[in-house]
Amino acid sequence: MTITGTGGVVITHWRKSKRFHKDYDKLGIDMRDLVDAKLQDLSRPVRPPGLAFEKLKSYTAPEIYTVHVTGNYKISMEINGGNAFLRRVGNHDEIDRAP
Image (cartoon, rainbow, N blue to C red; front, side, top):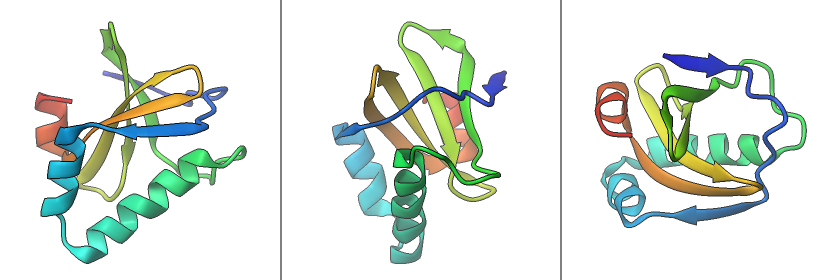
């Protein structure tokens, strides 16, 4: 289950896990462009409407958030203060199984 509308979370710094790099490198160029665009949207002080940014309710230590890239692809991350640690990028099922 997720909590949508996680307003108030402001991301100022990014770090990427080795797994995120591995997942990202497997993506086609078009999907990489979409991932990059979503990450830029998350960095904005006012997020675009319709940005599916959610906190995963079942993960509390650490708290994990996801953002939908497309209908079938997601990015998962941990957020601590303004720092985001990008964990994974992949299809919806992969991320739900192991964020």
